[in-house]
Image 1: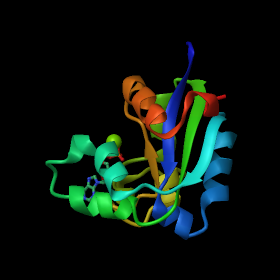
Image 2: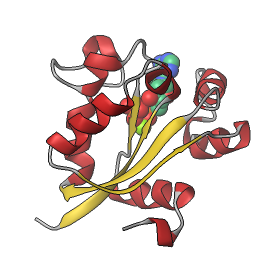
Image 3: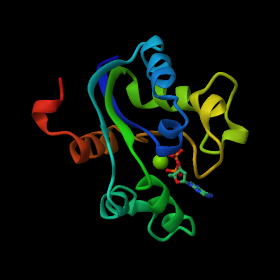
Length: 139
Ligand code: DAT
Ligand code: MG
C-alpha cells in the first residue's frame, strides 16, 4: 500500500484545554510521521472557506465561530492509508459515539467542540494541506 498523507487540526477546545502534547503523542505513537506543523489561528473568513462544504448545514455558523475562536495546531501527517487510519484514530464526530481509546473519546467535549479534524479523502487532504501550508513547509 502506498504511503500517503492526511491533514489534521487540533481544534481550539483541545488547544485551550492543554491537550496539544498528548494528542501529538497519540498521533506519532500510532505511526504517523509529522511532515508539516504549526500553531496558527483561522480568521472568520478562513473558517468559512475551510468548511464551505457545510455552509447550508444548521451548525455552520457555530462551527465557523468556534473554529476561529482561538489558536489551532495544523499538521500534515504521513503513513500508509493515512486518511482512513487517521479517521479511525480520531473516532466518531460525536464523542458520545467515539470508540474507547480514540482522540475524540479522550479529549472532545461535544459534537461541535470535538478536539480534532481529520480529512475525509485523499483529494480533500491535498486541498486542506495546501490551504494551510506552502510547499516549502511540507517536508
Ligand atoms: P468530521 O469532523 O467528523 O469530519 P463533519 O465533516 O460531518 O465531521 O463536520 C465537520 C464539523 O462540524 C464536525 O467536526 C463538528 C461540526 N459538526 C458536525 N455535525 C454537527 C452537529 N450536528 N452539530 C454541531 N456541530 C456539528
Ligand atoms: Mg469532515
